[in-house]
Image (cartoon, rainbow, N blue to C red):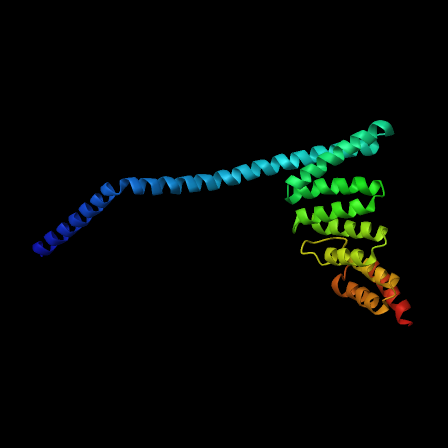
Length: 229
């Protein structure tokens, strides 16, 4: 029994000595590995902190753009307003090109609103498309797609408008205007003379948006008219 215990102690000492020797001979490599691991963890945490800081800064910049836009909308001095609008348009476009996510989407939406006020529907459509792309899966994406559809429709580009309305209505992010977008799809198919496609678009409304009584009633009215009932 004593001999067994002695042997066990010797084995533990032997293992500890071997481990100590390994650490001693490889201390530089182990230290570098440890430092690398610490740097990686610190860098990971710092990365999150930097990204959060940049995101907050970007949102603050967008809020400033929004305030500038609101002031310009109320400004009655048209001569001064024109130059300020151009400056704001340049700023938000440059900002949107450098920032994605919510901040970039909001910047492009301000540019799109300026173009829409000018009735420059081609540029408004492009800006709304960029806003939707920056917004990703956030709630701003279907709103931007809907507005891009409106801009396309104003240009008589009905096929493009239908595509945008379809993306808007089917977006992953919840969109309060989805039923309205779906009704617009039916309306534009009617304008193109595609009665069957219009009926299919209208019939989706009571199936998918059961609580949207206004759009359901409008869709059912169109179904009756188109079906000749």
